[in-house]
Amino acid sequence: MTKVFNLTEAVFLGSHCCALLGSSDRRMSAKELAEGTSSSEHHINKVMRRLHRAGIVDSTRGPSGGYEMAAGSADKTLLELYEILEGPVRGEACPFGRNKCPFDYCRLGNQIRRISVEFTEFLRHTTLGNLSENKGGDC
Image (tube, rainbow, N blue to C red; front, side, top):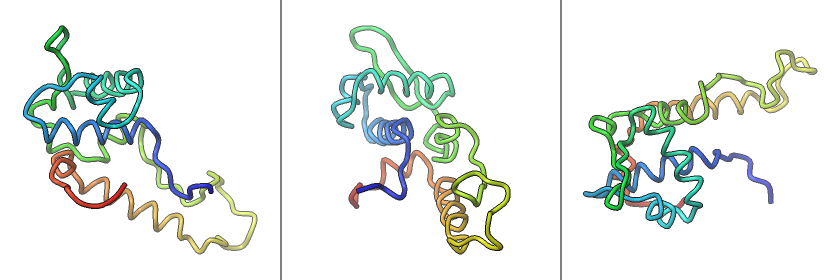
């Protein structure tokens, strides 16, 4: 069955790795993060490098190295993380990116725009620190 709403793997990995790191009292290796997210170590490293360049996580090389949350990054929002990994969020109403609808009005009743605005507001008001605090719910 096709999913109506789907985040990219990079956003999934970035947010979940930040949640793991935020709830840990030590550095975690890419291998540990990969195991914790059931993901590829290669993909973890790719995402974490981008978060490191943006100052979200700190990285230490070597046998006792790994990743940890950078000072002050708990106050960063999911919107900031999303835009680091995917680029600026656009407020498009049309899911097809069209400027002009072939109909007089949106046949979807502008629900796509409403949902997009609501989700963007969720991202804007949820911090990385909130991720490690959230203990309940399913994926």
